Length: 308
Image 1 (cartoon, helix red, strand yellow):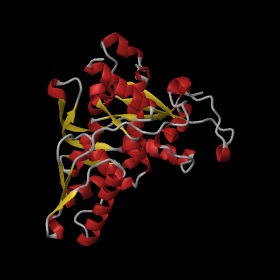
Image 2: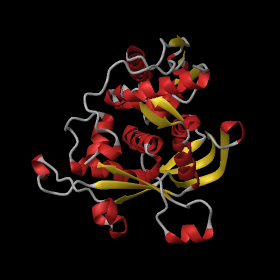
Image 3: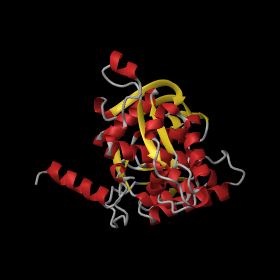
Image 4: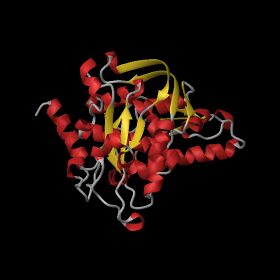
């Protein structure tokens, strides 16, 4: 067995064990947000938005035919479609993040509809599988990541409606299907990254069960393969805390708590703290190498083609 075959076997084993395939450039965007290179001028790039994007990229990577043309004029004028779509059912999203009933349809709908309200501004250098040296610069960017439609609310996407009926409080109602539409410069880069192994990385799904701020911090660093150094200001901006804080001692305590959570759950190595002055604290650490998920999902119906 050669090196490529061993790598592919390891990848298949990890996915079968429950690992997610997540796109890399969204992590770099989160990093740049913490370093004032990219501004979020509208909406909120938070842990829920990352969960939606991770779910979409996992679907694209595993079942890439969910990315398709949705307009006839694309065929006539271009070799490639100008827009891609990814349908995500309500049930699939809950399974992806491991939610066992705390999120109802109304809340999940709010989560999805908040994503297109996120407007990014800045000059972006992102990991990109199809560019020279796997980096792409998007200059003077000001746009959203993707659009959102709900299949049963929009006639154009009616063919993606779910035949499943909700249970419990919404019993009898049609399960919503959220359509993510990628057409902006960054959205197209995100989609094509997710279709390519070089543009994605494995992720342990237990991340989505951690404290929201811990999720956001890891999302911003998972793209880096070298030593990570972050100070109090950068971590605060990554997780959306007000800067400067009223109480530096409290802020340091909260940052230590996030780093401890990530370390104890195996996402980073033990951080080293630097700086005697509370206003000049910084931490250095590494993201742990991608590990195989040691447990297996009880439900093997997570593949879209098996979803009824």
